[in-house]
Image (cartoon, rainbow, N blue to C red; front, top):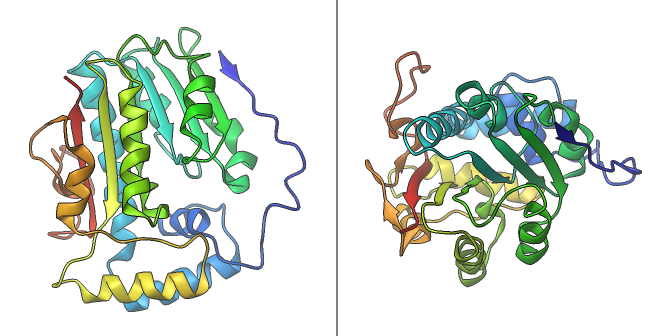
Amino acid sequence: MSETPAVGALGNRIRTDQPHTARIWNYWLGGKDNYSVDQEVGEQIRKLHPGIGEYARADRQFLQRAVRYLVAECGIRQFLDIGTGLPTADNTHEVAQRIAPESRVVYVDNDPIVLAHAAALLTSTPEGRTAYLDEDLRDTDTILARAGQLLDLDRPVALILLGVVIFIEDDAQAHGIVRRLMDALPAGSHLVLSHTVTRPDMPDVDAAVAFWNEHGTPRLTQRSPEAVAGFFDGLQLLGPGVVSCNHWRPALGDVALGAEVAMYGGVARKR
């Protein structure tokens, strides 16, 4: 069963004359849900940082591996995926329900572009459920209240925050959001988080982010690998820790990527 979002009047919310991160990400993944302005800026960023397309692929593979692990090895059957992004191959519910058809997934995003394509996220096995919430990451109480209509928040939930905390510039606010969400979930729940990093040996990444912040929307915030690891404080961090996404338990058949990408991720369990 699936729950259909109230799409409403999206025309005024979608800007086709301004590049947007979700559409550029889609372009780098080889999708078709983007416009010429996104393609142009995407290629300009690629010139500044030729490996940028590998971020998208590494992050996507990380999601798929983490979900498979949580379902098959940890028995997780509920997922709260915030910052969903545009639908593509093997979305969270598809990966989870392939292993456990009864899995339930709530997607959350406040991007009208994603909302317009949300029907692709609402397919589900008869045994499972999916829903899409048009909400902002900052409004944690509303997200939890609405997600609790589909998920049992007294049972373990996997909270997925892939490439979304980067839109919260203030460090205290970003950490507070993650803590508030995890505090509302019971022991046995897991946090899956990825974040763009800044490192002295990757100056081209900084240049690409600076270009994006000048020309695109919404603005991105980079953090050091150590700062990204801080989002997992108080949780049991699973091996191999917070690492380049393509190094988190790589699976046979994954597309080969470079030695490192400046998108770091990790998985941790709430005790």
